[in-house]
Image (cartoon, rainbow, N blue to C red):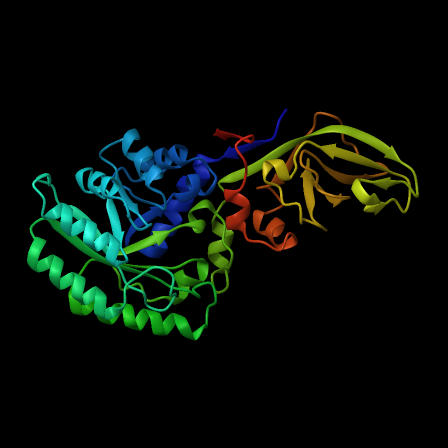
Length: 364
């Protein structure tokens, strides 16, 4: 059997219920990067079972198109700037929310709102305020300027909102969190706009002031976090939505002194059995993963040798009761994707989103 990523819909539904009890705000569900690698439409449909009027956020125009094509009545927020007149017109006409973070989008918006082609619909525009991340966003003065111009000239044609993004929310006591929150909440109070302050990690749910109208749920939604500092009780309740599986395709008897893999990177200190498993970096498993392990039945077995494009190898020991064709859990069982990320010196965000298309997604 080829590698497969099982998407556990019941775990996603459970996570939503748990997180909404903590957040107690209207939620924006982040499903960008193909639903964090879980399958965009699978995730959208599962969330809608729990919340029929759910609000989704994506990062690419093509993702917004895919969701609206699936169901034109869904609420979608596009998080990337619009630099194309066709895309902006499509978003306005289809009720897709989008950000205004620079002069190019502002000019396109004004041109369309003032044209004879504008339909009798209201555009949904989120003014992105740069509170300190210095990536995308407007200065405080530009937010006020654009707000005034849009409200006075096109107030009957658009709904305005305000958003920003914390840079260090996965660090509980970082000084930037309080500074950014203060700037954002002050401007939000002044403009009286519906608002959302974006952040990552379980830390934010414990530390950040939730004085906004919307709360974004990203990685936590999938039962994963890059930081659970200050939220250990939450970590115990959330369940992984993806479990990545592969199969033992061969078992070799190795003598003491034999090596395994490219560049003789592992040498047996004693006679043992080595399982070859049909997953590798061509499937999204990190080549830099050293010292990690996989789960076979109820036991953990260490990774040995190098990670190849199509295979990995693990040490079964001399008396391992394993067999060719047996299922292997790469992550999502006793091995967490956070553990694999730590061993590979990367983040769970990267691992989940780079599981390749040759790994089939199966919705359970």
